[in-house]
Image 1: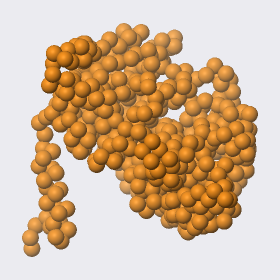
Image 2: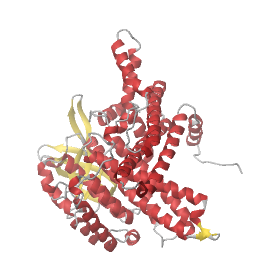
Image 3: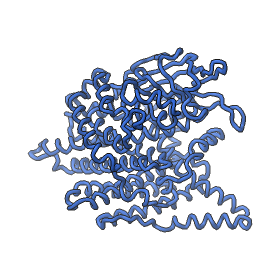
Image 4: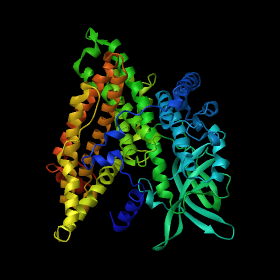
Length: 593
């Protein structure tokens, strides 16, 4: 990472909210249980409204959404889009004064989970429209912009899209090449560039488009990313490819777009001039949270089908559910699905409670649920055996659809490096200041004392207050892992200092540990609330068994990751890769012939 990249990262990730999020505090070895216990509940106003809405949505899906036909024909019928708009799903989180339903993130995630159980393409269409396509308007739009665009977007009369990715700007969003040049005489921006893989791009009526434009800064004029509201009727808008052929999510229209001196009025600047990247990152946090809900919906469906098949399918004169390896898959799948559900709605609850910062939590949720869904689908297909390979079952379609989840809105590898590095950053600042202060310990005695006091709590296991005695063991074990995690971070930073950002295999272990800590927190908190609400603990017995299993598995994962931070094969692994990628031929030969 060069100096410019470091400057940009500091500006984007660490110049915003001042209140440290729950997940970031884990890197300090601190567990703020007030933020996660008790488990968040749906808003009181929606307790009657939401079940009725979900019932209508379920009936509509059953009657109108044919996922196999949508996949086969590579299109979502207009009647489906209109129906989703008529019932309010396409404007569910838009404020009521702009034509939406003003419902919570919890309600929206429940609805998206239900839709994704049936059709991932339809869920992705809604996600692209509402979670990211129009979200910037809701969060950053002026009153005039909101009143102009949101009412039609809320009903589905207009479709939204979010256009960011370019041929040379995927995960590296700062490398956007599309340019917007201001014409002061016409008070317009002329945008020139190309965008690729824009979901809803060829059917959208309103697009949030990212482009670089010249901005005055304290350091002089700089090229910074700005968000623009673009419509396809603007001169210079071109659809280069309306519907790219894809492995999965085939019902969505994924388009390549071109802009040739596209004229955009100055009043269509969305958010602050030069503030496009922060806007983009904020919007993607909402999209990643919705990813959690859609992955959870598909996962629950797969687990249900796998259990049903394992019970009914007999081989060797006994149900295959009686075989140890099948039992292992079913137990692991159930544990993962419960953790996915618990983590999704804990994160949604943070949004509904107006958390100042949930960037790290949203990233963790996206990575965890997309990886877990892939594992669950793999095991489901193994349980079904040869039957899963044919198109009369939904699993090959679901597998193709699920592949995108680990790539879209930030590939999981990039997100893992992000979770590791961003989480450690604030700890690193303190460690760096302390190491600098040690050069003159007498002059900096006060700073060093404050550092020691602040870090002394890493030596104490945080107390995690759960109500149910049935969860005391898991809560104590979680507290021990939080302590171990908090102690490992400064040790790692002292050894590698700023070079840690290039140690991606170490960042991956830190990210995996953070994911396990956050998801286990969600599991324990939810189980605690379920037990408290249950008249008889047996009514939550299945969830309790699956949740406890997940906790034990997560603890083992954390122990393995932290135990291999300083003794591992990373150097050898990278050396082998370097030999292969730096070779002249670029070919790999397993043996000579």
